[in-house]
Amino acid sequence: MTDVGSLVDGLDLVVGLADGHLHPDDLERARRAARDARNRVGHLGSTLVAALLGGTGVGKSSLLNALAGERVASTSPVRPHTTDPLAWIPEQAEPALGELLDGLGISRRHTQRRVPGMAILDMTDVDSVEFRHRRRVEEILPVVDIGIWVLDPFKYGGDSLHRQFLVPLAAAADRMVFVLNQIDLVPPDERGLMRSHLVELLKADGFARPVVLEVAADPPIGPRLGIDALFSHLTSRLDEKRVHLGRVVEEARAAAHRVAAATGVTAGGSLDFEERWSEVRTAVVSSLADSDAGVAEVEESLRSVEHLIGFLSAAAGGIFGLRTRQVFNPDRVEAEVRAAIATMEASVPRQSDPTGVRREARTAILDAELQERIGAPLRRLLWERASLSAVVAGLAVDSAIAESRLGIGIADD
Image 1 (cartoon, one colour):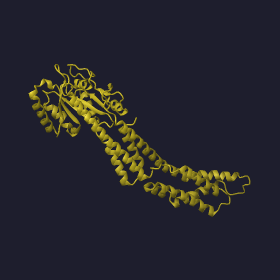
Image 2: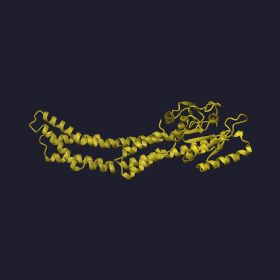
Image 3: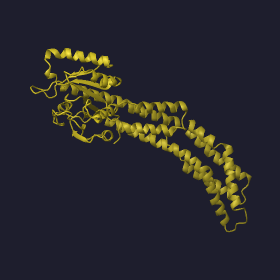
Image 4: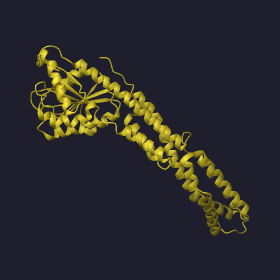
């Protein structure tokens, strides 16, 4: 199944194949479109990937259980408890998500049907004394869509937390959400002031408009608090991602279409070369292999080959047509045809040929020479163009599949 990541790979391939067949300005525009799609931060698949981040004991695993509506992750007072990340992923996960988790070394996975378009990763403690835990969190941030930083309501203002961990994340402010967990431990009349204080601290860290939510994921008494609001925020981000990826898909398709139009491959890449070349070659060989062929037959053969080159150049158009005409200009065509004739004459000179054996030999030699000198180089040029045509056509199909996958909805509880 196609995802946006493979679609971007296809656009990269289109741009690579178009090099040499496209005007430099058009090629640069296509490269820019591929680069912009490739440089999108986060997971390129249709699944929204969120990572639960935070220090020891803030309740990341409890928050995952609350969002999942079931016990997915174990909890424990022993710190650090989460020694290996856990992924809560859709039952029918897209291939790109599996590849992402494999690349991150996340093997613990719990499948779910609740939100087909969402995956949540319960990461190891960011302030763990074990360096590998912190390193894994640092590696995952660039490849997820959202980082959910879970905070303790009594430790959220720590200088080391902000200086060492949050300030460096300000560049990714639009992808960060901050959750004050265990808010049930704070008197209701103090929660607003606490939230305002955290917002000011985050602004000082470089987060211009920080998203802060108050949650009680696993209160000892009473119902959970704020889970619906957090869940709603994540589903809205999923919708935003689909809209954004829809633009990526559309731009990839448009870029490929522009390349196809500029290179003239919209009607196919082969231009019926094999059939046309076979007809011209057969006529030329038939005429020139005869022992009585003279200047008139040579001139007619040159016109036939040049006519084929002209047709291919005109049909291709643009830079590719110009390149074909430049490579096989009239002087080269004449030189190659005359060289082929010379090889034939040297190998099987003109003599009486009552049995036709010599003509057959001359025919075979001339045919092989024309194939090597003209047919093969032309075929290589047209193979590049045909490859570009095939990739562009495949990209159109992949775009439609990717758009279909982006239409996955939220399942009812």
